[in-house]
Picture 1 (cartoon, rainbow, N blue to C red):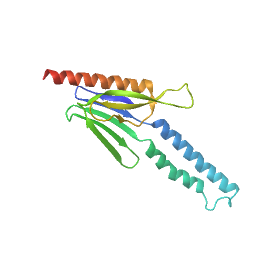
Picture 2: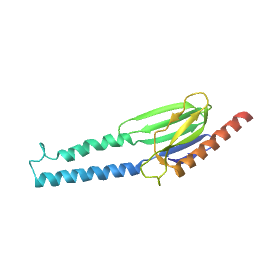
Picture 3: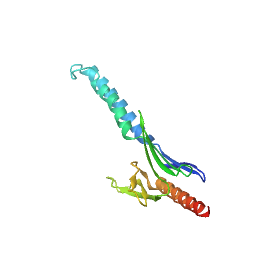
Picture 4: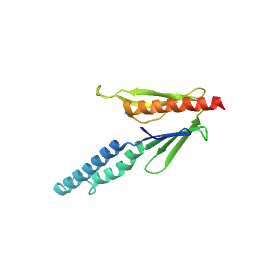
Length: 163
């Protein structure tokens, strides 16, 4: 997740899981190729021709649904925090109160290789329950977003106290 736009009135951060999409695309292409090679060499192995390739074509949209584009927007004009998840087909929108937002905490995810630090951002609110933004990213990227959100909240509260 990276900050893509920041003004005094609005902060927008976006997460593009391009790495996951490329991995899924390569895996599906490999499955299709393997299915074609197996059907050419042993045509009676599968009940229907190209069933492995068909499986890959069905699996690709499902996996892309698991890794959507996520946009976090803090908007002073509407006093909202929005988390929008855009899938291959459709989108989901969650909204919360900007006045209630206290910041972002980073939740560490245990991965098999201890050399890698993978985190998920959690939106922390004063009065309402916290909201997990279900993405996985490096600590460097998320710390940048965490600092930008902290600055935005401090500035918004400072300007609100002046008026």
